[in-house]
Picture 1: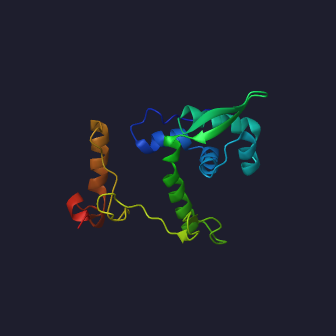
Picture 2: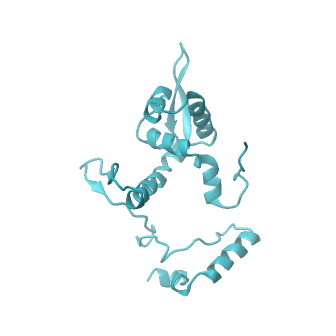
Picture 3: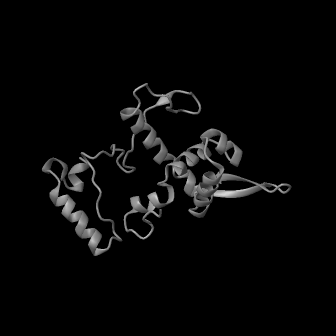
Length: 176
């Protein structure tokens, strides 16, 4: 069964899902960003079938999130290390972990984000870089970007029009 490709969609969320939307891919990236690099390490950590792991690793290499490096000639063996693009995926995983701990952890938080120097658990939030204002749906919304095509501009304008008034404030009033 073939799934629909999101590669040609204008939405950056859809394009991102094309690269990491398969759940094994996100878990492989989690482990790679935690320091695992070799096939057997990923397999032991995830309990994933070798053929599926091979496909997912190849896909992540093709997408530019992992780099394949040979570490042994006889037999040929490779390790998989995050690229700059792959390292930029870390905040996505932090956000998923934080959301999961808040809404889907009936037995408590089994994994947290901790400061590497102190070991203290932290409560991460997404903030707007210039103002340091936390980004939440009550004060920010998706909008057409500067390179959006007319269809995308129309779509986001219609969504803004349909938003309840408490959520539709101008960008200037959001930062006050």
